[in-house]
Amino acid sequence: MFKRWLFVLMAVTFVTSVFAAKDKNAIQVKGSDTMVNLGQAWAEKYMEKSQGDFVAVTGGGSGTGFSSLISGTCDIAMASRSIKDKEIALAKAKGISPNEIKVALDGLAVVVNPGNPIGKLTLSQLADIFTGRITNWKEIGGKDEKIVLLSREVNSGTHVYFKEHVLRKNDSNSKEEFASGALMLSSSQAIADEVAGNPAAIGYYGMGYISKKQKALAIAKDEKSEYEVPTIENVINGKYPISRPLFLYTNGEPAGLVKKFVDFTLSKEGQDIVVVTDFVPVNK
Image (tube, one colour):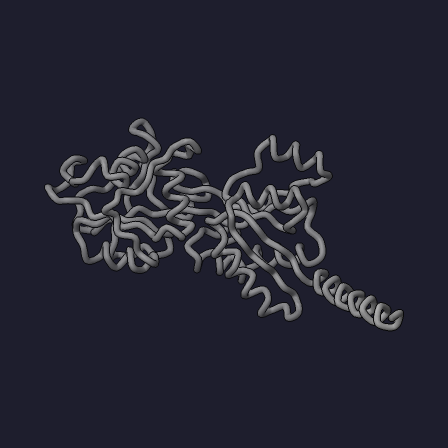
């Protein structure tokens, strides 16, 4: 009986030791749904280059990322907003020191067919269009033609951001939704192709998909503001209103595997992935 107990104890100790050893080569990344595809793309390429290291990436929202970092259940939080004062206070109470690292910028182009005479819109006009309050181009100075709404599908971070930032105007209490007639497409390329062939269509996607087959609209925060076109420069300097920084947060200065992964995200290869996933690099 004693030998059997000793064997079980040794087996449990061995398994625990193995997992502990693995944990040294594994990190958890949680947070922003907008960034989850980017984070997973980073992780996949990083693990190809660093055999033996493991990076797990899950979404849940920026708030979930911060909560996980504060509770110690993740090593890196992804966030599409800055951490709030109350979250910092809670973190400090738990002995956590949130360290912010800007890793990408998010800029979305709103596009129409080149034959559409409309060249600029305000954020309020965009909200009215995509929620269905404006349904005909003639209502905003265009042709007498029904507007065809194109959106990314609901599980897209781009869809979520556009809804939160444009439709809901960053109001957490807002319940605004896309019009029921909006066509939910599976990719940015699908939106680009539809806009290119449909004079009545309007859609949005990462700036990397803009071509001569679509016209990117100039956007203003309101009627008193300047209309700005979506360019890397306008996203970087904050002039283009449908843009924001994207962050990784660590507990203090990153070290070990966390530092290796963060350094990769900021490397040329990591920033190339930023572009491929429709975001704007912070390191050109």
